Length: 390
Image (tube, rainbow, N blue to C red; front, side, top):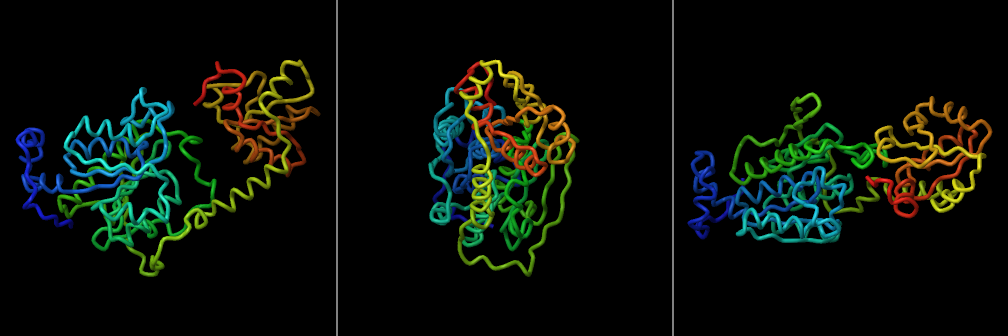
C-alpha cells in the first residue's frame, strides 16, 4: 500500500466539482482523491493500451503522469490508439498524449521521456513513480519493465492484447508474483505474431487498458482486491472473462540486476539467422518488378504470401495468393508447384519478412525463388501510390 503524506495535499474549489462522483464514494472519499492527486504513475507506451489508460488516469485526477515512448503517430494507429488524432499523424506520440491529458486534467504534471527504454535508463526513469504500467507490445521491454520494478519494489500493472484476446494482472505487489512467474522464459523470436501481422480488434485494447487504469487507481487507494495473484483473461469474440491463479515460484532465479533483454529474448541471434537466410536469397526491387510487369514477360509467377484479408486490402497486379500458413503446413507447397509449372518464382508479402520465410521453406522442397524487397509497402510508396498502405 502506498502511504503518501497527505497533509500538504489540498483540492482546489474546481476539483471538488470535478471529482465529486469520486468523493461521494465511501471507498474513495476526500482522502482517496487526495491520494490520487499525490500519486505518480509511469506508463510505458502510448499505443493501444497506453491510450485509454492515460485518458482515464488523467480523468481520475492522478497528479503526476510519466510517459515513455519514442514513436510517432501513424494513420494505422488511429483505429485503436484513441488518445491520438489525425492532426497528430507524423508527430511524437508523447506530445500528442500530453496535449490530450492536459485537455482532460490541466492540473496534471506530465513528464515526457522520448527515449527507447533500456537497461541503462530504466531504473532512473522508474524511480520517481509510485506505480508503473506496462503498455508495451514486445517481450524484451516486458522483461525489462518487470525486472526494474522488482529491483525498485514498484507495482507493475500488466496488460497484453492480440486479435480478440487480452489479459491483465498486477505484478510485484505486496509479495505477489511477477512477470517471470507467468513467463519464466521468452518464446522463440517470431513465434508470437505482432498485431501488425495478426491484427487486433480496435476496442480490445480499450477494455484491457481501462482495466489496467482501474488496477492502478485501486493500488493508489490501498484496495485489497487487486488482480495481484490473478491473471484476468478476456475474449472479446465470446465476450467472456475468466481468471487464473498466479503464485510466486519459490525456485525463480533472484533478479539482481538488469541484463541485455534483446539477448535474453534471442533477438540478435534471430536477426543474424534472418540476415543469413536473406543473403542466400535472390532479391528484386519493386522498380525491377514494375519493369518486368511492363515488359509483358510470361516466364514468372508472382506469389503473395500474406493473409486473405490483407490481400483484399491491396494487391500487386497478377499476383497469386498462397498464404504463408498454408506453405508452413504443407498444402501451400503443392499449390506453389502447381501454379509455377516450370516458371520462375517471385514472392512478396507486406514488407519482405514473411515472403523470405516462405522462400526458405520452399527451398527445402527444391523450389528456388526471388524475394521482393520491401513487399507491397514498397510497391505502394515507390511504384503505385493508389495501392493502400495498411
